Each structure stands twice: as C-alpha cells, then as structure tokens.
Image 1 (cartoon, rainbow, N blue to C red):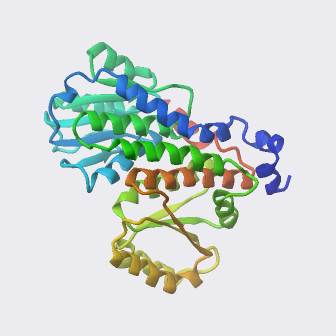
Image 2 (cartoon, rainbow, N blue to C red; image 1 turned 90 degrees about the vertical axis):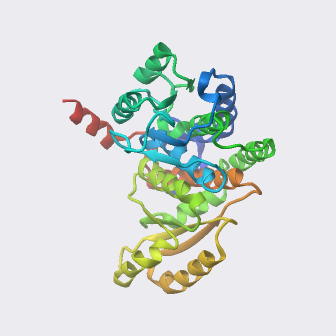
Length: 352
C-alpha cells in the first residue's frame, strides 16, 4: 500500500496500527482529566504538611518524561529545585527533606525499584505514581502517598495520566502552583488541537511527518522550558516511528554541534526547531543566524511554534504535536507504532 493510504484509509491504518495507538493519542485529553481527578482524590497524608527542600522525580523511559516537563515548568516558577534521575541510584544530596516521586507506570521497573530502596534508606519523603506492580503494592503496604494510574497502556502512551498526576502531586506538596485558568486553557487546547491532529485528511502533524520521511530527524529547542518537550519528541520518534533521532538546545549547540554541520553531506538530518514565546531574544537571534548557516546543509529546516497563552498550555501543545508527528511517520513507514521489539528482547536477555 502507498504510505498515504495508511494515513487516510481507516481500514489500512488499522492493519498497520494493530494495537490502536491512534485511539490512545486521540484520548489524551481524557487522560488529562482522569489523571488530574485521581491525584486530587488521592490521600497524600503528610506530604501536604510542609514543602520539601528539593524534588527528585525517579523513573525511566515514558514514566520519567513527566519529570522533565515538570522541571521545565518549575525552573522559573518554583522556589525549590526539581531534578530527574534515570539510574539505579540517587544523587548524594537526596535526604530527609527531599520529595522523591517514584514514577513507574508498570510498577515493576528495575531501576525505579532500586531508587525506591535507596530513597527509603536515606529517609526521603516518598510519593508513588504507578498503575500496578511491586511499587504500588509497596506503597499500599507501607502507607506511602500514591496515585494509582489507569492500567492497560504502554508507559509512553500514558503520559496524559502520569504528567497531570505528577503536576497535581507537586501542587499539593507546595512545590508548584498553577492557576485554575492555566489548567482550563490546557484542557481546552488538548481537546481542540487533539481533534484537529487526529484528522488524517490533512493537518500540521501529517505534513511534518511527510517532510521527515526518509530523513533522520534532529530536534533543536531554544528555551529551558522545552528541554523535556525536545526529549519527548526524540523518544516518540524512537519508539513509535522506530527511527534514530538526536537533539540539542540553543545556545549550547552554537558552541560545539554547529561545527558538525561543516562535514554534513548526503544523509544529513532534517532539523525541527521547537519555538516558544519565552525564548530569550538573544537566543532567537542565534536561531536565525544558525539557520542562515546550516539550512542549505540540512535535508530540511522546519520550525514549529507552541500555541496558547500560558506555559503549561504552550508546552503541551508541542508535546501533543510531536506525539502525532511520530505516529504519522510510523504509518508513512508502514511500521506498527506500538511494539517495542528490541526493548522486549533486551529485557529478556537481562532476565536470563
């Protein structure tokens, strides 16, 4: 079948997308509402008594992306630092005044369980986000603050649940306060933009996917608020579209990576720049000058801008767009976006 058939024909799309990633992406707005509700209803106990001195989100893969997005939002708005750890152990600064949010959608992630043990050994304040598994069982048995997320999804496909739950936990713990208007604007955008991006007859995500087809993508962004969005795009290209994808940020890439473009030739990547109104004018100038120097060496140069007034809405507008771009790119390549064959084989090999 031609690639466009998989995008426009429901029957052909379903034959490629056997596990229904389309429906999952189309349900992001509903995930957002449900995750928020569950976190508001959860008994967080002493977590609300006093704000922590610092916050660490401990997780891997799709379960850790919410931490990156929280860190981006918190950078200019929170009175305490927020960090993300993807490892087996914790930084030396984690202690009794640290809030460690253990995020493992499955509840069985090896690295996250190791960080749980380390955090408890240091007397850190704990909160758990999981749908099931050992981590959730331990939270219940030990009376740890926790939010049970709905099950049945791939971790990367449950971001609507895990991110809004994490933001709500941070809010209730006194780490980051988001006004009601910001939640409302984001929810409205997710519904409206989500419906538009799900219309495969023609939308921005499909157009970007078609331009990226056959070209390795390279993600650039120019404001710290979008660092986590940049990573999300990269990992969605990896897992959904099954393509390698790199990324970097301004102004740092102007001090090193730009020199790599001098040797770019056949097979050069296509650049996608994530833009936001919060960019420092000096960074915006750097992006423009870099484009003038690099564009004719790249397979393509594309820029996409966030939408909305408030930071949370703008951030999520780009997250949603990237999810759909990776989906349409998967269809264009004729690959099922859900299976993660090499990850599954890796886990089996490690278990032997």
